[in-house]
Length: 442
Image (cartoon, rainbow, N blue to C red; front, side, top):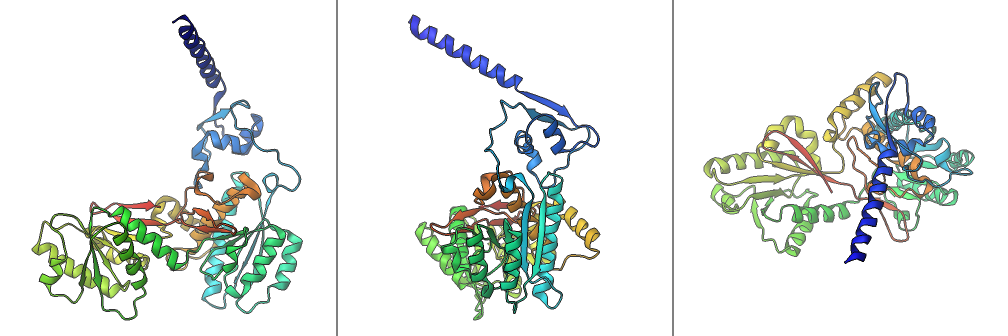
């Protein structure tokens, strides 16, 4: 027994010594008026990234250093070792950002992209407070533009990242340019981009409908596996939601979930027969039209009045988001879930703050568009520029790379084998019966 006891004593002594060393390797600092994150890090012989890593709250986009704050200063021994930065590594200099979008006032495309561009600029301004410098170069590339001259100008700039294009016809040239130059290419909106299958420099934020339908249907089957699903036919020949309900039926079958079918035109007794009195029910329309949604709410009102014990939730569509103001009481009453890639209510305080800043900086309100495009631009720039600053050219857009708190747009990129990166970030916005709204990211 002597040998094991001696071993335990030695191990306990070593662990105590390590714990004491850790306790001694961290100190706190009380922030004084006028101090900055960069200045505090520099004066303590550590990098800004090491200071932020020791104080996770600093990763939030709305973080502001305040007089009197107590922050942790890791020692050189405790601070994580970072790769040496040399040459033209983007981590050691200003990030060169290019924007190639229709930036004009001629039509809706131009006006929307101008607002998105302003969101990019607001993010660059916020990043200044984190010690991240960005050199911005922007070119107007309308639908009929020959982008070859623009690419010649961009070659002289040698951008680290390009936001664009908007139009499919410009995709091939820009993709080839980014592959040749080693430039990160962020496609922010809907576009046909087959080049992503073979170009590892492309990051596509937009998610194609087929993949999004399959992913949403799969998450539906997982999240509502204890519910009674009811698919409601709306007799809408122009509906685009048949693809989703077909994907949903396949996923429900794959998960061995029975479901009911009914119609908005069904008589009250037939409509009620699709509902369970033993389990909660989740209703899915096969149309995103507001008119059909309103008819459904009327039928559910009659149903629940006649059958008080029936539990009802509704699974809607992204197209319902602009109706929140007029339909919020019904959304809460019927426990509505809306699938969406972006929702400004994710960070209400930050969203309001940025909306006020936009009005102050640009002397106008944002375009009445859901989701607000300036906030979309802010999220995109903050995510990618922070990633480049921290990881350089190795940044792969994975959600876990740093403490990213989106204003409205969760981003989570997956690598396509042999190609680029596709965003898989998505969420359900849940209007709870108690009046609260929660976001469920997946």
